[in-house]
Image (tube, rainbow, N blue to C red; front, side, top):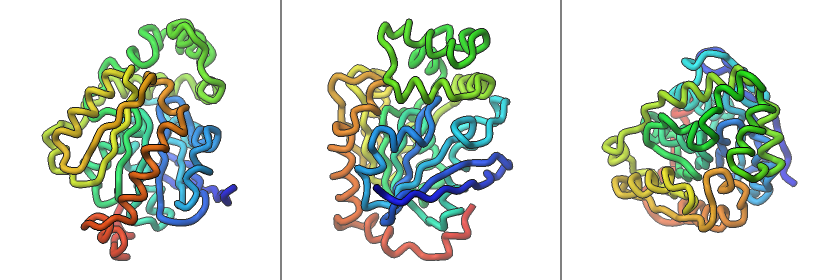
Length: 287
């Protein structure tokens, strides 16, 4: 099992962001989805399976051990993206491979748009570049805000399971129950107003990109195909039998595509791999 090191960094707005690093090697950032935390990556076996990289995980603001501001304005995609950059800066990592699930993938699209020099390659797992208005009701259930207001996180989980008709996996249920309901309401309110990254802006992205989405996760799958059509170095993989909620738990299925992709980007010929090897130290000063 890889050696784990913990740290906390302050984001540009002062919010504390908790992070961990696991092992050594070329940096790879794993960014979780809404309501989860960095613990999910170890719990589902991703950290150990990706040994050979310096795996960096973090608790997004409002989650886990990070700060939990209570205003929707604290949870824009730009603020989330700045949190990731703050962690990379704290670790003196000029650029890293990036794998994000759901909200984590949405943040990755933002980084490709505003800080592409920090991302060596990008994997979107159940993510979208589009506006996320209406997303919480679709991904969770229509009465999510009322459930949070009346029943806190326990009420939210119960309402979600009733809507699904099946229980959540234990890792997901445990992670959601650990959240602060006020922060979660603010996060979901912000998601309702997130404009996304226009497809025309993605046309300028040259970062090697892998877009994974379940074949039962139609909104994210359709968005992935749209992104792949306009990006110069992107491809889509449909994960058979998965909806949005079950995609992350299929570690073997996901990594069966991710590991060869990362290996090709790291070792393969091409300007991106060479640029990653020759990246200059002055980039450490970027914020």
